[in-house]
Length: 604
Image (cartoon, rainbow, N blue to C red; front, top):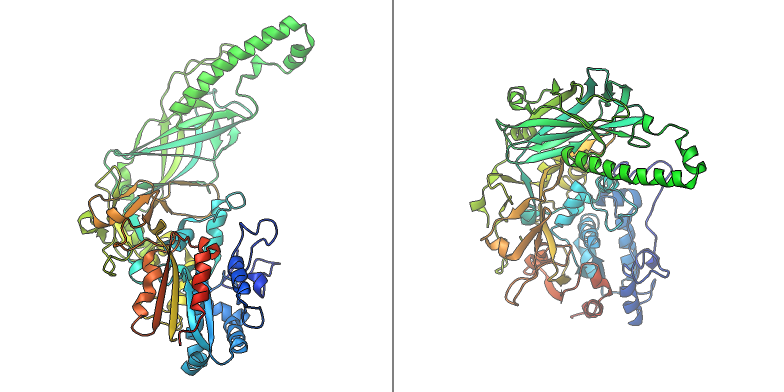
């Protein structure tokens, strides 16, 4: 993880491994068949007579940092130029890139045109072999920055760590969707936000909490059309009548854009003993000694008693779980439903309120002579409500975003090569919900990704060598060969909603939005026939007939892979499509090796 655009964590310095060893395998040992990068390609090239240092060189790079920083810190593009000049025997050099490496090559060509001129490119660069090139970016890169991607490392990375790592890389915006692809990549459910801080629970009578126990609250918000539930962290007991929570604890709920008149909140108070959920008087401290030292019949009687007690406790816990909204332990109280209508006139301000607990019957413990009725008490809360318009004004400085109405909807490239209209996204159950189509810049502002925003502005939008619009990106060379895997299910967009989340401390990553599992594609549209949606992610599906345009390679969508077609009238363009070849898997595909070797044969 980086602490700045080019800054490592204290005491660390990581650089790319030089030479072929830096691009062949992640683990060149027994797991090389699982951790290959360019290893299979290098073996195919070596069999055809290519030798490192003679007619083949590797240009490994630090993929965490932005292109400007690559040159500023590592002099990477000057080093690439030196290697190309060394290899060139008079006919020019073919430059081969895969995935993000193609973005590096594209920037390198612009850099060399600015610093050495067009004559240098004409003399030294014969062709660019672009393999799985995300020319217009990939929606998966935006998703990794916004909601995290553990990249298969679930055992080693938590989701918070994955989000923090992805947002720390100044190279992240390099792969963001561009141009027409970017216009239909992110959809945001129009929602308000309810924030709740639980301050304390107080019982008024002498019967309060047991000693040596934890107290948790389950906060249930009923919006009328649906219900949201979040649990607090465990509290610390001030005394037997009061439990308190730190001010840093925060519960956030996604809400309708306007406060419903019948919205209310109810709180379940649960207590769980840290060692055993039983009354101290039932098992004195010396019980275990007698249980194992008296005669066997007494031990068996105690064993049978424990079994019966276990059944009783199991019934009690199951009942508590069901009525307590997912918090283990004994129910100590439930507040009366508290109407939230008064918050409409208090938008954006924290309001302190008291939620009272009515008396309710409880399960008695005859051994302890506990009361048949719970003592009344109260829960002290702080609540803040913000409408969707208020959130957008706060983070974007403007009014609410224009909505994406279902009838406007109709990803990828159409069969005639043109970009179709954006997919229609709606809620799976509540058709009145509205989804706004947002730009990546807007969602980064709403999410609060200031480091990513800063990297985008500094190293991409304001870099004259990088075309952040995706419209004027034809490379200043004479030949391009695109080798793409096609017809794999590929990610093309995502739908987000406010993250119902508990933040336990101020250091928790503030991830305001998450993938919307309730978003679906509207049926009956052209997009719904070629795309699917699952857990908030929009996928383009493989084509059914040869006449249809294929889908992407499983990572890069087809609209990005085929962007190079737009350059065909300005340079010599060839294209090779490998059916069902995945984005990474193509590197080990013999069809890919043959295509690369053919592309290395001069056409003149």
